[in-house]
Image 1 (cartoon, rainbow, N blue to C red):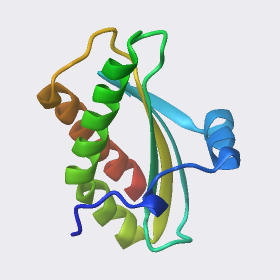
Image 2: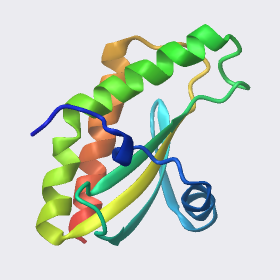
Image 3: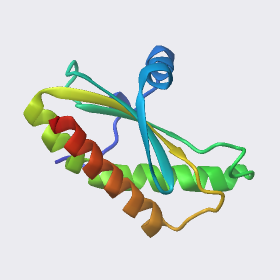
Length: 127
């Protein structure tokens, strides 16, 4: 599996983000709140993801950027946990990971949360 996070894998379209917020299901795995929707597969990438670190939680821009970088890196390295069940089912998923902690956590804590999220979404993809 390729360990890149390419442009088509990033959720950027405003309509999709609005649909995700309006219709998506959500759950909480510290330090993230995950909003997601399962869809039929349309592209070669079975998942699209967006990361959000609210200014209300983390005031300094460099800290928000650090958290976003750590979350993207953890997702990039472990996305195959989610990709395998999605590819088997011929489904796709769009999701947004919203950071909910008031503190800047280290990479290990963020990575642990992302791995837990990906495992849970992989189980939800099988349903």
